[in-house]
Image (cartoon, rainbow, N blue to C red; front, side):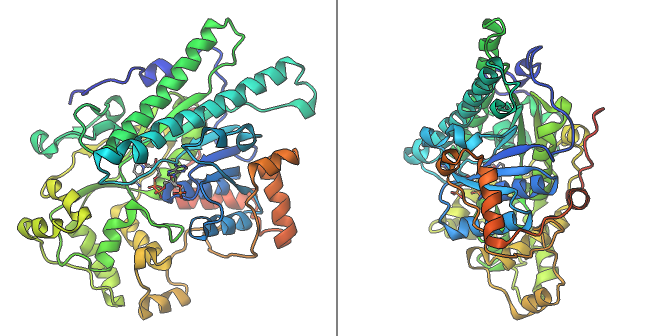
Length: 497
Ligand SMILES: NC(=O)c1ccc[n+]([C@@H]2O[C@H](COP(=O)([O-])OP(=O)(O)OC[C@H]3O[C@@H](n4cnc5c(N)ncnc54)[C@H](OP(=O)(O)O)[C@@H]3O)[C@@H](O)[C@H]2O)c1
């Protein structure tokens, strides 16, 4: 397959990072303070959990710390991990909210936040999708660059004094999407049976792309690579006076499924929710390329530290999943518990009628009968050590999570509740995989307040958590690592990889 268009700056060009690029040590995250943007989101919450399980201290950004549906699970997560998770408020569209206090103390960054909404009309696309994707990425990376300048200045001015030491951010991992690789293609012309052997080398054709969400992902990722290339050029032109650029890696998931950690609505829950609620009378002939949210989170963790990951893109693809198989798996497990999952085939002409008043179905219509290509995930497996879960496990766990949190009005049947009470269903949060709450810890530290107190948000939160909850149930680092390894199935990346 040919590459429809190239970015103005290729990752490979940035990959070298310059001779002076900071070196990243592999594996251990215990000494790291990591900023995660979009911590409230479906993927962002899992990235926070995966990092905490690997021993990191995490600062998560949320838009509105007062919205219980978005932050309650994070407050609980913080308590479960001894206050190592702090929340700060920041909006992608408000440049001023990405201030020095948000990133204070951080050594690594995962930029996950970006709206994942489909079906946005052209007239609303700039405001709803493109601006947060493009300007949000610039705002976050500019904050990192300013922070590193301050770190370099402090070092130059005698950073040997411990109290003046500001650690620089070594690497940023951006959540992009397979949309930024292959979005906009007309698969009906290209045909099923093809394999995208080196997806990381391909770029979406922005001009031909018809989906505004897809475009937003292409725009965001190009913005990130261009930003780092510009920093690198500045550093080279400054003859060593400007700080070396931070490293960049991007993660490119297909459609993400797997257990949600909160009741928050996310586009990823659409299919499972529709099946469990029998919102469709029968099954359309549709196929989605899917990947498990826990494997995507594991890829983020590994990409932060794997030595060779700097300057690289990583496709995260597990399988091509048919809606028939999806409903069969759900029906088999959840049918006996009272969920009336549709099973018959939905003819396209009926879909056309439903699409007249159902936007989600309208968007699915062009893809009826179209299979996706196979996408090679060899690079993520080899360089990040990620093992991808099967669709069976992801679908079952996704459904349990959607039911547990009653996402989008999915109800808990009596039989499901009984299984939950008996501890039959897997749980996905907490240091040991348990969901125990333990105290109403107040962990939302306004960045400004932390700055006033001359403490990092992480320090402020840890103190607040201790005060309010009397200390969380912190697991030992060893136990956390063991759980992380078991749960995420991503062996620690060795320095040789
Ligand atoms: N889910 C998938 O299938 C998939 C696949 C490939 C890539 N991705 C990418 O993964 C990332 C997360 O998606 P998701 O599935 O986790 O969706 P999600 O649950 O809707 O999360 C989106 C996150 O972005 C935040 N956000 C949106 N607009 C913002 C703004 N103006 N300022 C600050 N934060 C803002 C949201 O904050 P609030 O909670 O305040 O709304 C939320 O935390 C996105 O970059 C998405 O493009 C997702």
